[in-house]
Length: 188
Image (cartoon, rainbow, N blue to C red; front, top):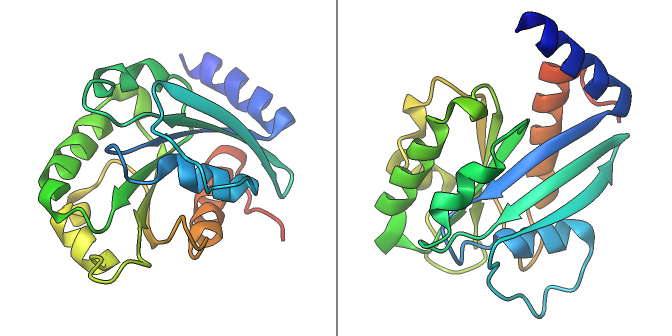
C-alpha cells in the first residue's frame, strides 16, 4: 500500500493537479462560487442536478473542481465522487439558520468516509453580503468545528455574489494541499 501511495504522489508531483470536491446542502451557493472563481456569468444559476466538473488553473496548479448537487435526493450519491479527493470545500448558507443542524450532520457524516481521510477541508461561510448572516465564529460553534481532529480545516467568510473572500479561501486550500502533497508552499 505504501508503494502505491508513493507512485500516486510522484505522478501528482509531475502534473501538479488537485482534485477538489465541492459539496454542501442545496442552495448554499456551490455552483455560484465555482462560476465566480472561473470568471463566468453568475446571473443565471440553476440547481445542480448531478455534478459539474470545472478546471481552474492557479499558480502552476490545475484545480479539478467537482461541484456536486446538494438536494436531499442527491446526497446518497456524494460518495460516488470521493475517490482521490485532495481537498473538500463545504459550502454553508450563512443565513440558513433553520438547517444548520442538518448541515452539521451531513458534514460530520461525510468526514467519516475513509476515502476522504486526510483531505484538506475549506468551509465557505457563504452569503455574508446578506444582513443577519451568521459570522464565521457563530458557524464554527454551530458546526462544532473545534472538535474536528481528522482534517486540516479553515473557515472563510465569503459572498458568491460579490466575490468577497473566495480567493482567500482558495489560497488557503491550495497552500494546505500543496504543502501536504508536494512538501512545499505555493510560490507567489
